[in-house]
Image (cartoon, rainbow, N blue to C red; front, side):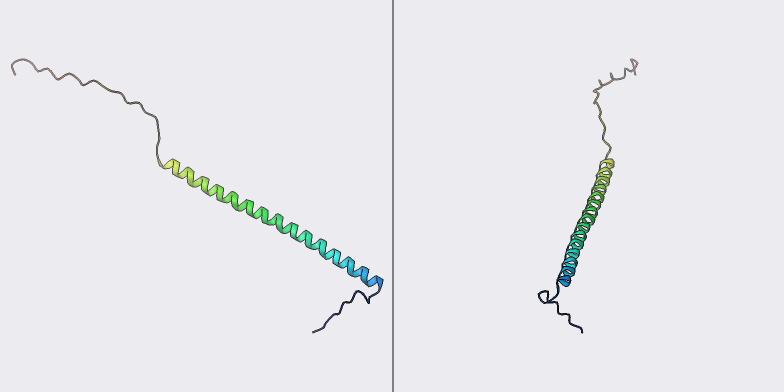
Length: 89
């Protein structure tokens, strides 16, 4: 296996500038990668929460439709008079 020894103190000014630019490029690339990962994670979390809300909403509607509810008024009626039979029977 090849071993690379990077000693910036012994290198020339051009080598140090190139290594500095590469390090800065990797840092910027890492920052963009982290930002993209955070955005993707946020979108996935939002989609998951939206889906969970939708399912709970559907279950709640199903539960509400299970029972019939209405308003009613109780009307008291008088008892009908007893039937009158013809006399003599």
